[in-house]
Amino acid sequence: MPNKRKVVLRVNGRQHELALDPNVSLLQALRDLGHTDVKNGCEIGECGACAVLLNGKAVNSCMVLAWQADGAEVVTNAGLGTMDKPHVIQEAFADAGAVQCGYCTPGMVISTKALLDRNPDPSEAEIREALSGNLCRCTGYTQIVEAVRLAAERLRDGQLAVAAVAPPTALLKGERVAESSRSPGGPGVAAVAPPTASLKGERAAESSRSPGGPGVAAVAPPTASLKGERAAGSLRSPSGSAPSGHEKRGDRR
Ligand code: FES
Ligand code: FES
Image 1 (cartoon, rainbow, N blue to C red):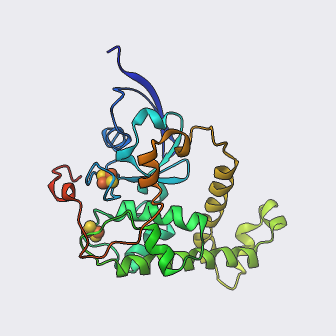
Image 2 (image 1 turned 90 degrees about the horizontal axis):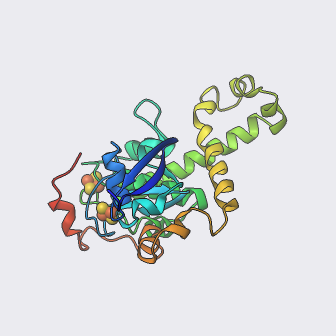
């Protein structure tokens, strides 16, 4: 079809070359590719269920056209961790009882990742603000806030343990495993540590990107940018307005 646009999507480290109608949203493109961990809640930027990281920034993928993400790095919840190897944030959500039906969880995890990348020790108010664009119909939010606190704490502990155990020189020499086994934190340090390195790497990469690069700031329309980055507002109370589309959607894979 003449109107189709060629789009290269890089999702969770894998590259996809697609020909898409210009009006296809990133949400739809991702789900068509099988990334059904990106949830379709409202499709109007209200619920945050569809949140993904686009070049390191949380955006609502329903508010971004797929071609606007051409060449950008997209990371979904499943790209952060798996059932076998969960990310620290995902583990914290499970441990804190912050998952009930789980429909909001992928978006919550993505928003938490974006928050902790830029602020490793957020206050409760900062957590609530950062998650203000993510609605949950089940938990009442208390456990979710607790999960974010727990994740932040574990990530910080992991950072400290690595710093105490393996000086940079040792790491360069490939002595990480030997050093980890002698650490006060024991052999578990290695399992806790990777997200720290990952977070630092992503922050560095993000800050080095030019404003004109293929990132979210460049590609997302103003509405998507504002809603995706959850610039303002406080976490809605359980009694707050719910996204009408959230309950109506039939596609709940
Ligand atoms: S589906 Fe995108 S914000 Fe609700
Ligand atoms: S756990 Fe059900 S919507 Fe959040």
